[in-house]
Length: 315
Image 1 (cartoon, helix red, strand yellow):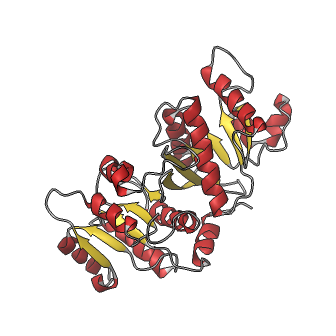
Image 2 (tube, rainbow, N blue to C red):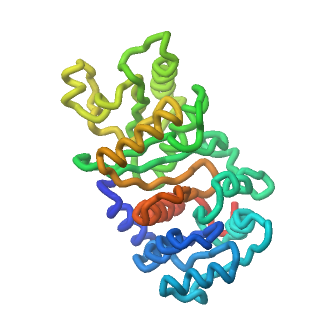
């Protein structure tokens, strides 16, 4: 299966047997709290757990017309990192996924990768590599398309690209995709020894054929237009039943992923939701400039992705 749009993701989250619980690190952020309470009203999550300055958080909650007593607020004052307390609460079983609030991404992820907190997942399919998955709802496309990695791994080598695919496939399978189709994007469709990304794309496809990357179909090197359009694929003589049906697009590096993602957002008027995967729990990491819709959709994504990933009460 796949999801046609973000409404389908939200509907899946509402249909889970248990309401998922999020822990917000640095919960003084009004827009994040607005998205959290919208998700609760929609039946996507249960009562949230919030870390940060308790008085400011409570005041922000009241300004949104909500009751602070309906949440668990863990006061973190002074120079302490609210993400550390958030990670401790998740390790204790108080939540199923993490949401970035008003703090820098590096401060959020630092306690996540600290092995003492038991959230770093060295036994994950990717061996502990953390990566970003950007889900796009693109006008004219009949399914959500996932882009990786435009936000975490700057210049992935061959082994890290394998990890990006494994992370994406594991997450999508948890969410209901049976056998995701993966396109390793390059500028051309043929191997060129002078273009390292084409060599690596061909090797990743070979790994898939050998069973080293399982549970999916991997093709590459392949250009974006061929991957997304069976008509263009036919014109260029690229034979594959997956053209126009790929679920995951793997870019050569973070710059390419970031540029492609922003092009889809700004010029194609796509909608976006993004999560970080590879730890024991998925993480909502959005920028301060992200729309309320992006934050809401990302929370719904994490709710679904966490349902088959993290046992409550810690690992």
